[in-house]
Length: 171
Length: 171
DNA sequence: CACGATCGTCTTGATAGCAGACGATCTGCC
DNA sequence: GGCAGATCGTCTGCTATCAAGACGATCGTG
Image (cartoon, each protein chain N blue to C red):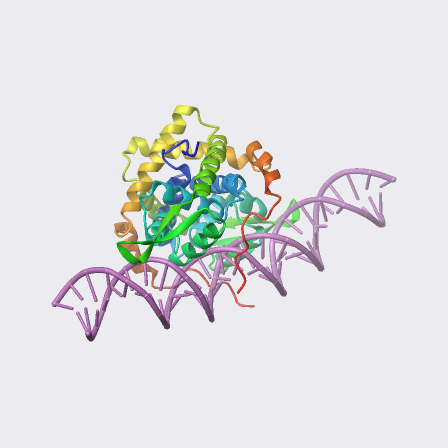
């Protein structure tokens, strides 16, 4: 049987397309902030204060810790956040918002909210909330299960002995 | 008022987290294919045959045309696709699947389907379909409106006169 | 106190992506 | 017909971005 089993919608493509649109809109909306959309997310997480250390922030955002260093360097030199030594663990730094940072965050959230609304415009308000809710559930689940890679991926790992992608021809 | 207006779920973070999980799973599932997940998507689009030229494919997938060249080079040298001259426009190339490509695509779709199911596991089947549907609607809308950038982004463009992001310090 | 592990930083090497130029070709206009 | 401008795919070179590794400082455990 050479006929692919499903001609239905491609989740991967839809995700990618929405992501691209979101990134474009977000980049335009918060472009003035160091680090772009990710800079905003750092601010947002720092405001909630749930993630204290840089590493926790980085993992939650899915970036390398070295990248987080640059990100925070820029945000700090812009006067939006401060690195304070964690009294409980002097290796770690606590990321706290400055007053200017809090104000900036407030502004950014408004802009971003407008961009999101436009992105989700094809859906009516009820559907928008459904989409947000479903995405959030999937995100929180997969995020907390980071150390627990899915079984399917696991068993497929074995077949990856050969180099997956040709490392782009030399020139 | 320095209190951010919304403490609710962050669409950007949720999107990013789901995207990361999906990419990780997809990369593991189809890693053996040149170009990884994007290679699969090229195959998938080529099979449907809706997008004929390389450029149309590239735009639909959101990649640069130069990248599409490398992508197709790898896929072609792997014997999965062929570049045929378009009889109607000898500048353009038509991307068609070989038999091996069709077979490979069939296999990949099964793997990917399994990975997607696992990703969406926290949702029950009905919710999964809802999510797919909503994402698809947003994606198709934003994708077709590519040439028509959203108004909010447009009016914000003006404020971007200053360099948005510090170009990462020289070393 | 000694040992290994962890956090944040810095340096370095690799890589993907983009801008630009190019030849080949199409289109429209004279 | 023939010329100018635009378009498609390719190639080249540069840059930003990322990840791996080493390092000092610190934790905690025996």
